[in-house]
Amino acid sequence: MEKAKTKTEIIEQANLSYDQLEELLASMTSEQINANFKFDISKDKGQHWTRDKNVRDVIMHVHDWHVLMLDWLASNLNDQPQDFLKEGYNWRTYGDMNVELWKQNQSVDYEAAMERFRASHKQVMLMFDEFSNEDLFEKNVYPWVGGTTLANYFIPATASHYVWAIKKIKKHLKSIKA
Image (cartoon, rainbow, N blue to C red; front, side, top):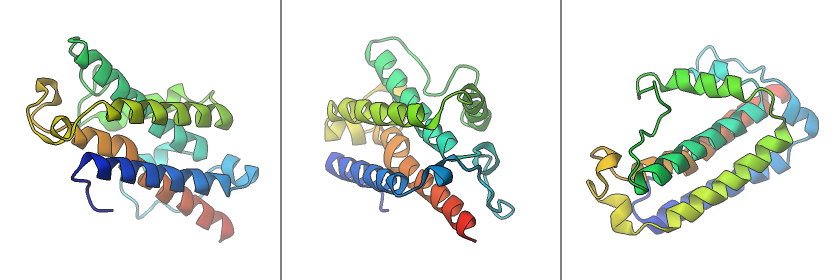
């Protein structure tokens, strides 16, 4: 997927990949959804390959990043400075933060995860709609964005994360069929 260059493109990519993820999940049986991942991770890089154990974990991860985005935006837009990542973490240690979030979500069932994911997706898209192209793509519009653009936060929190989730779930399905 080519990186979005306009607000319209971000919306289209987020909605397309969201719909694809929803369609993939709707095509799965309860057994497939609830089965633990058993695919080979020996060639895969990234802590997430060992962190997530099932589809629920993947969905909750995406939801948690929606929440990070929403909290960060709400706080900073209300002149209450807040970093994007949870307190105590930075971009070198965010993998550890993801593991902590994973631990906190182990009591959430798949149905609740989907409700949270769908609700937070809607909230992110509603929040996103409040920004103009300039707000999203110009640097230094908001000092709390840290010299980058808002788009560089919205894209990973939506379309890129949905594509990642699809890839991981498809790998799970392929391993089940093997």
